[in-house]
Image 1 (cartoon, helix red, strand yellow):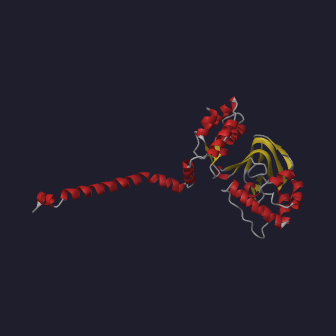
Image 2: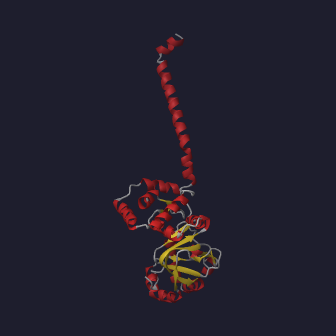
Image 3: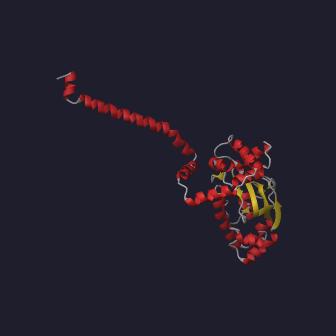
Length: 149
Length: 152
């Protein structure tokens, strides 16, 4: 018995379908792994991002939420302070996610922002700008939107 | 809050010192008003003073763009956070009006060097404070036989 007859008699079609499926699944998995490899490498190069990743996923407990709300409620921005905060927001867009605070202050000064020191202090006090633990700072967009917009 | 004794007792660095040591340090601290935009220490200048924050907010700018915001009464701005080998290595800019107590660097180091027990207490509290406030700052280990003035 040879050819198609032999294939039919020994479940050849089923075996080849299973084989093709296994190889195809393997290749898909491999391509997915390779496509996401840049994320792992980014974390490898900047381990501080791992902390941020876990922090972001942790649900805020009630007291933290309450504290945050209290800070925002206490922060009554005057018209000019709101304007200052918005200008800082524009400057931040030109910077990296984890930015240098002295650099931001320098940019604010050379951009002739009024009361740049006091406005920066307001942003720190209201937790719109928060330290990332490695000497750099991040901009909390949600907090900014709640307090300013 | 404006009393130096009160602020020394509240400071995480000095609160563990004995009453005698606090009394010895007290006369060296001089209160200074600070205003937004003031630069109270500039990198590369000769380090003359260390500072103890009474109130207000101060931005301490380090190398490579790193910085720390100090706004807790009793925060001590000195030693390797501020200087190395008698030169300021960071710049202190005032963000919020308040006041600091300035203490001459040499006098401060001399007082703590006179009393090894007080020096050990301050250095232990200092390392804890640094770990909490600016963990990324390289801690200068106190080396036996080398003076504090040489390090800071």
